Image 1 (cartoon, protein in one colour):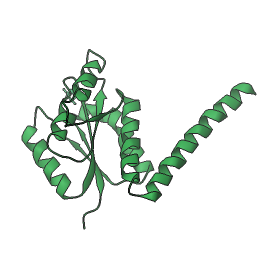
Image 2 (cartoon, rainbow, N blue to C red):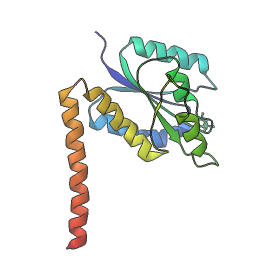
Image 3 (cartoon, rainbow, N blue to C red):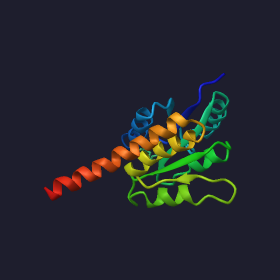
Image 4 (cartoon, rainbow, N blue to C red):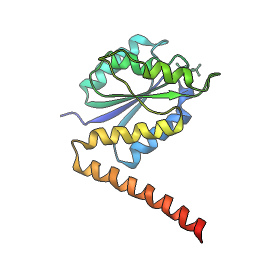
Length: 164
Ligand code: RP5
């Protein structure tokens, strides 16, 4: 039986400094992942082949990051019916607004769960993948809840420091 994993695709290695946040988040939850540079525009055939192969090997969720005319998430969503999370990258002259619209404005029936532009979105892509997989895993769902609790406690500690 294949091991379930998350595939994290990025259109260029220039996306990695932001997408490292997704990889780090998946590591926190102990979720196996593959990271791959593949482009909807520059390597379309390789992207298609990877997605089909990853699906067969047990990929349960695809996270796709791209900047500029960001078509990677949409192209992947057209190949697979597994959940696709899109991360718009802010590395161009339009500060990621171009990537946001290119990622989010999918035609009906081919969804991309689009998160925020940049680092917050990259972090949320990891959380969202964990929450999707957590539907079938009590252990993972509990780990997500525990991280949320830690985050709440960090906010409360900052407030307590302010009040002191
Ligand atoms: C997109 O074009 C990539 O995802 C990247 O965000 C952007 C620029 O790519 P490079 O020119 O840095 O390789 O396809």
